[in-house]
Amino acid sequence: PDLFEAPDYYNIDDLLSEEHKLVRDAARDWVKRDVSPIIEDAAQKAEFPKSIIGGLAEIGAFGPYIPEEYGGAGLDQISYGLIMQEIERGDSGVRSTASVQSSLVMYPIWKYGTEEQRQKYLPKLASGEWMGSFGLTEPDHGSNPGGMTTNFKDMGDHYVLNGAKLWISNSPFCNVAVVWAKNEEGRIHGLIVERGMEGFSTPETHNKWSLRASATGELIFQDVKVPKENLLPNKSGLGAPLGCLDSARYGIAWGAIGAAMDCYDTALRYSKERIQFGKPIGAFQLQQKKLAEMITEITKAQLLAFRLGQLKNEDRATSAQISMAKRNNVDMAIKIAREARQMLGGMGITGEYPIMRHMMNLESVITYEGTHDIHLLITGLDITGFNAFK
Ligand code: TGC
Ligand code: FAD
Image (cartoon, rainbow, N blue to C red; front, top):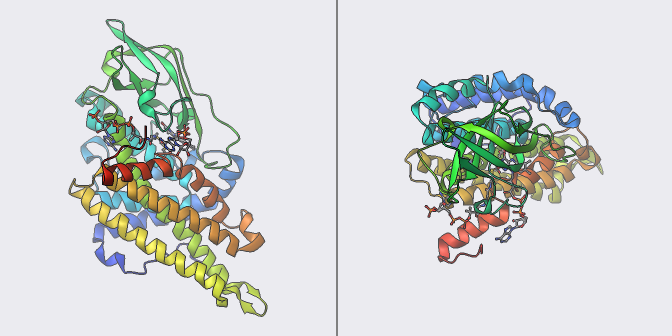
């Protein structure tokens, strides 16, 4: 059976261009063919499936909106969102790898880097020949990245970097890391650190119950000599990493819809086939309530993401609007995953179905890129003008 029947209750497909549909369908077919058959095993073994890197590059998942002259796919923001949706329908961990590569590594090099940096790194990142990671979070500074202590000193002909980053997606195998650190005046800058630089190590974080098919680790810097040409010169301050987060959070708002769709689709099919008390469980009102609410929430999330995509295309989406969509859509997906899991009874806890994996993955997604609470406070600040963070 076709395991990917996309819910489209409000005919949102009518709003998409032919290019959007082509890009989406290519991503959907690839996920069905190359990701779905292997992902459960990868998650059970807690291994990132490196065999899919080439496929991710082919569907345009590495730099969907980066111009073609740098190896990107040159697509618009809605195509970017649709690619993330389809990948996360497969697994949030795979989408994480694409989000980090595109929005957290390629985006800052493209936006804040020199022409030489763009030429050197972007084509290799777009093709997946090099993989990147993004180091903002530290052991003592997660929601409050402005408090970071990782720092670099100007030694005349090079910088010396010290500090540590924690919870870094792709760190164990990355070739390059975009690292945020403070200079001697306490100003935050981005530095490109390459594997092989002396004093740079990337230990893996083990025993995760979530995002098991994505590799997470640390970035440790002990007197790492970084060439001066590796500093991203065109933006500094906390706003620089936060600008990257805006792009990644937007992609997550779409991605979460994919995970929710897969849970809904699985539960709907199961409800028509599973007989208890002489009837398909889908004929009972309690189960219909769950399914009806799921499709309603998915539809609302689709409309939010689509409109946000239009605003992004016009360069009008505010950070607060992006926060609202990330928060709403991930919360929507995690609630659907929990309900859908229950609808499958005991079968719902096994790897025979994708729901429990999505449910556990979404516990990371609701925490990273700004927690559920932090995004609420961003909305609160935006509408009241009062800062409730501090
Ligand atoms: P605050 O004083 O509000 O802002 C500092 C400066 O930043 C500017 N700014 C933004 N710029 C661009 N985009 C945004 N979204 C921005 N939000 C704020 C702001 O205007 C200001 O600029 P300037 O020029 O005046 O200095 O900062 P704060 O210290 O009060 O902190 C608030 C904030 C927003 C940073 C915090 O609420 C927050 O967002 N915390 C969450 C941290 C976070 O999201 N970390 C994510 C780490 S990366 C990750 O999780 C990757 S997972 C990837 C995957 O696997 O998919
Ligand atoms: P904390 O900030 O310590 O928060 C703990 C709790 O306190 C949360 O519930 C939070 O909402 C709440 N809280 C904090 N401040 C406030 C406040 N002012 N008011 C009310 N409540 C508050 N980071 C990267 O830089 N790069 C990556 O690639 C990356 N990948 C990740 C992958 C995974 C699997 C995970 C789990 C995390 C990843 N992160 C990454 C880190 C992620 O962004 C942080 O975990 C997140 O920002 C939260 O920080 P924290 O874990 O330190 O929690």
